[in-house]
Image (tube, rainbow, N blue to C red; front, side, top):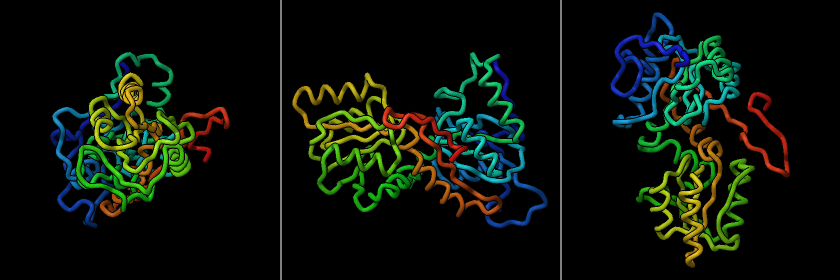
Length: 306
């Protein structure tokens, strides 16, 4: 088993992996020393108010909860590039919507001796970083910071339709091609992919930000929407399903933005919310360059050069 330092200061709050904060933390209380990462993590989860799932990927995935915090960074994905940007900004508590260790559960099985793992682990240690995965708590919070931030970034707050399993919008009449162009430009999704007739009339849109799993995506596509917008989905699930819908004559479209473009506006919004909740340390959102490039612009951008 590959080694990563994750210490526990005190028994963690159930399902949270962080120590209990002092009662007045985050409200300008007088302190005799720095605030620790575990205290802030637990405070943030308490303020979000989302229940703990029986099974969740949210947890401390790197670092020591006793680490004094110099600042908080929110990121869509905890790439090494993102961690470098956070360290340069003197933000050593990183809250990420997606994985750090290249797997759904951030497991380390099979990483022993892996040079990429060692480089990332050693950078985290050398810079006293603490990384907490927070996706499930954000998804379950009401209001949902990811959904609110994405709607705000798209200018769709007034077009939001309440109710239903997925986020829904009723837009001014457009078509699939123009909607795709709008999303590409607004979100910087340079490798966006689309299924459906470019001329498909579009008014009703559903969105699943981040990964769209099989049945939520299929239920959305079976509803009266015209287009489903997602971060990504397995191609043998929603992509195949919507292709078959079109093959039997249904008027449907699917837009895959990519994981980072589909979460980034939400994590930026979350950082703004956090800044109003946490007064001890500064909060910053670190925007990531999309990891893909396209044939029209074959440039491998990384965040730390932006």
